[in-house]
Length: 271
Image 1 (tube, one colour):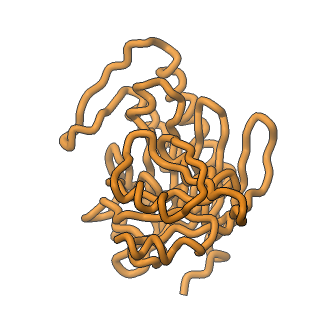
Image 2: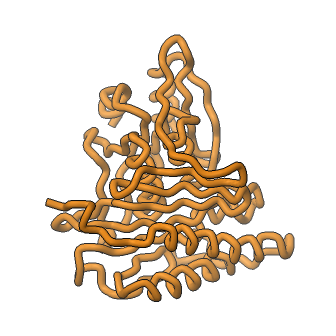
């Protein structure tokens, strides 16, 4: 059985790496209104900022040790050679970056293997524009660090008669999203980009983030760790804890990020 006390890691160093990557992204973000955009094989956008952040993160993580790195922009080492790996999205929310709405993040997760599945045990999510960082997991309680200071985070589920605070993607909204929202009855909706949606659940500013759209493992793993460290849950369509394949099928099933398990039954019924 995995014992988190066996993990020896300079957590502050990982936070620092994410924040340095954020600075590299901001340098490009603030430099010009003209951002060079390429497209990858799946037609998703790729910018100079994605690559700059990727290169910096890989360079800095390799200084720590030789733990394999699985990144959206390319791997370093073989994750099957060990029971741990880094899972990185150097710029989560490239479309938000291109739109210049500020709702993009740097995601770094430390993953632990259990047979052929992987679980996040520590994660860092950094929002460069607001200079806010969320970090934590099963190895340390989650914290939020920003210009106003640093503090421990804890989910804060809304109780009736207060409305359920629902957070959703600004670009992905479908029939199942509407059906789930209807089941909530009284709710307030906030739209947001990237893994920020999960982070505001972790910090107690929202209750639910249902995801009925396509995502990859690196899109949510770091925020998943942060949510876990704040007392929340991230579940798959069956209501079980979401786990990941970082080797072959990198696509996630639909998932629900929640402040508690009150809504899990309704979530499962919608699948």
